[in-house]
Length: 268
Image 1: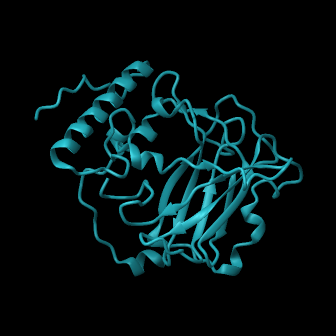
Image 2 (image 1 turned 120 degrees about the vertical axis):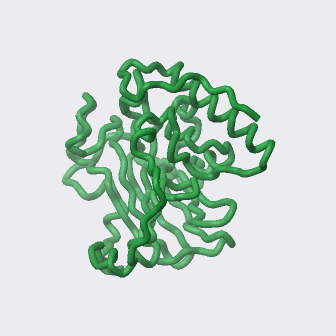
């Protein structure tokens, strides 16, 4: 079957419109569905080369991975122990002198393997924008206010049942210059380490009902609808704390057919 694809957008053009990006995303989605009907092969992770995500055209891998000695890599990697991860690091609202601005939330879930078994003592790191949609990073210079009481980074270890838990502020959407009037849906970045620093996985968690999902080429670069939905947390009213914080649950599956899409999977 020959696919009809619209003319690709020039990655150097500053005035690419949302309509052009949306057309590219629709072309990729329809091509995927046709291929799924013909061959039945699902794509459960982001495409590394996804033209609507314009910078991926220039930076996605084009050559086979180069094998390296994992022990040699680890000699240059950080080393930590369980005593190095303090409980307060899981509360992103409590590490400054004052209260951060925004909607206080609790995010929790379990890290599981393909058989539903808990992954214990997993290092889970998070980072995010503040309630105004701005990162505490020198490269983020868009005109939204910084919050002196919110840095937006935290970490914890999963317990014996595979649970992690963070208290934080719900992040805001932010512009990202992929095209004219491009905005990212609100999200939290997650990083998970296994037993070695060469086993790192990176992914993103989104919030339910975000109107920017259909317009965002990073979210849409996962072409399988069911896989995309696994990145969306669920609101949990039992987790919500009266007069304090709303609650969201998001489980992370590391392998198998129900695994959570990640940014580090070479099979994408």
